[in-house]
Length: 67
Length: 130
Image (cartoon, each protein chain N blue to C red):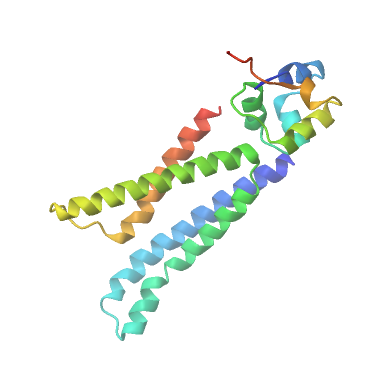
């Protein structure tokens, strides 16, 4: 799954640690989501969407279908 | 929130190391006495006393896992799964090799083996998501 988390965070001038703190997760978790190594749970995705005042679909996009 | 997470990690490390230190001292002090002491019930009680700090360490582990976020829990789950599978594999393989004449593996060695594999698996799983 692709995401725009790094862009959204940069627009607000937040560090990974600040975002992690606001969400109650570790900085490593934010980094893993941004680099696409970890897809968050639905509750965490909703928290992210709420924090950035947008929809989940505007943060997370499915991978391109290779077929 | 970040302070809580750091405090939980620090508390876990401190209490885990303290528990294992007490365990090591009890093993060194009590286990030599187990063979000499009588009656049998006293042997049993004395042999099981080092289990007390192990139970404390396990309860601290459970509390620590409860304080983790979802990715950290996944790392722990993957590490415990790998450690369980590999420990079962190694001990079962050793059991078969005992039939071929290798020395008997003492049951007390299973937990340290599990902990060793678990430690390596946590390191590997953490790297995977870094």
